[in-house]
Length: 214
Image 1: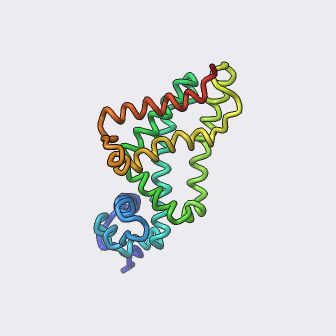
Image 2: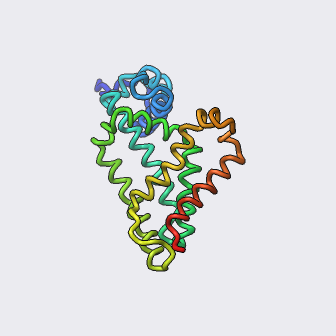
Image 3: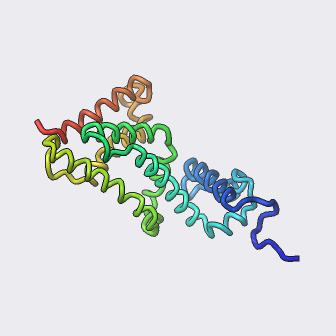
C-alpha cells in the first residue's frame, strides 16, 4: 500500500493545515518573539504533528518569514480596499492616517512581530521578495495621491511618498508601542477612548499641516 509522504496521521486539506499552522505561529511569535517561540506550542495550537510544520516550512526561521509575509499581506490587502486613487487627495490622506491608526489598534500582533524582526535586523524580510513586492503598490498609490494634490494646488511639491508613509506609521507605532510607559510617566490613560480619538485628530492635523499649502 502506498504511504502518505506527509507526516500527519489525520486526513487534512493541505491549504487548511498551512493556514492553521500560520495562525498558531502568528500567535506564538507575537507572544514570545522568534527566540522564545516553541515549535511544540505551535504544533499544539494548530492541532498538527510537529513534523508537518517542518514538512511545509522547513525551519522555525522559514516559518517566521512566512508569518511576516502573511501579516504584510493582510495590511496591504486592506489598504487596497481604501481605493485612495479614486478619492479627493486631502480625504485620501485622512483615510490613510485613520486606517493605519485603527489597523495597529486592531492588530497589536503586527507591531510585536515588527519589533521582533527589528531585533534581528530584518534578516528574514531581506530574503523575502514577496514582502518587498507587496509594499511597492502602496508607495505608488501614495505618490499618485501626492501628485494629484500638487496638480490641484492643494499639497506642497517635492514630498517623498516613502518618508510620508514612514511618518504616518511612526506617529501611530511609537504611541501604541510605548503607551504603557507613556501613560505611567505622564499619568494619563493614553489608551482610553477619548485619548485615542484625540490622538487620531492630532496626527491628522500634523500630517495635513505639513502637506497642505497655505
